[in-house]
Image (spheres, helix red, strand yellow):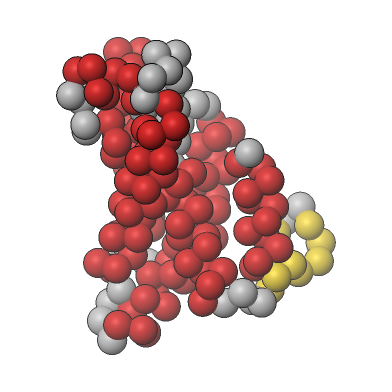
Length: 162
């Protein structure tokens, strides 16, 4: 795997998450809080929460799924667009963050106790782009000894994220 957008996102997300775990003020400043976003106009939180994760397990699961599917989606976008696919891939990733943030914002705008972190919206966007392009591609996981179709993996991921 070459060092492309997927590995850059994984590296950046891991670095920001570790930084936020070590400095509670950074964690607080980056997390997603719709009530605070509206009250203080801190719209940057629509994006920043995706680079902070609750703990190592949360970070690992999201980045593992991104690693498994990200580069392939970027390559497939390149095939479909005739270019490298990088801009479309980054657009998909950022769009996934923003779309999931808008849904959370509308749902929790009046809830001062709601907080969220993580890249699940962006990772789900990448995963489901892969599923739409290659729904029956076999996925091999270390802890599942048989191949599973990518759409089944998508269902399992959604079940985990609930």
